Length: 352
Image (cartoon, rainbow, N blue to C red; front, side):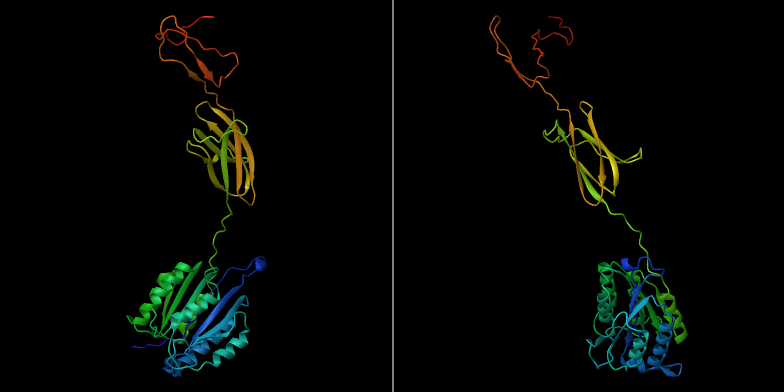
């Protein structure tokens, strides 16, 4: 079973930066990872695999649009038996001629730290901040005791929008290398390709590199509006018995209606809104307009103060004796306290 990689390619495609937002074609950052492991000297179609890979890469570089900013990474090309042999040969944005020259200079020697190379390239392109697409082409399996499937799953969890597209090259069906490549693609929502010659390899790479960056819908920013009501101007905050509604300007349908309660809050996009509050017990209400701009907003409405009369009197008294009665919070200076028999029905008293 073939145990070494032929070629690893990573292309991370990110949306255009704000400075390029008006450009006709968004800028794409990419890192190309070339496998320099010893099995690259194995022959196919009469040529060493490294030679075939270099030709495919050279043609790919000629066909990629100018908007794709490339970098080059290689591994296994400096030392034998060293899983840390990973090197960035050309920084992202380097000239295509410099990348071709660096590719031509790769001489396979060592092991295949495929997974660590993918992780390092992703980190260089800040995959936790930008959408990223990875292209990995391999003729074998990971040889540095790292689980590619688990690593891909972890990268997917941490990345903004990471996809790993994998291409199996000259791999037997059911081989460990093929299984690893397939699961890496599945764990990140990428595509898997199985190729057996240079033409199929080139076709797969062209298909992947022509894929456009995923355009996520732009979600407008939203801010919090906090709503509260007081009993009277500058009075205590009302803690229950309130229902709030919010409508956008020019829209009859509420964008928010609260359950009965006290203070409340809602998440709203920038704009002009109208809110109203109703006290259920006495149907007192208030309303106001407010704007949501670029920060959280607070709206406080004052309702008419509720007047509750508190009466203090003895439960019983001896006939003919004096009794003391007091009351507080009268609603009007002309309010009266009336004493009637206990069995008097409401509304029967007609005294002066």
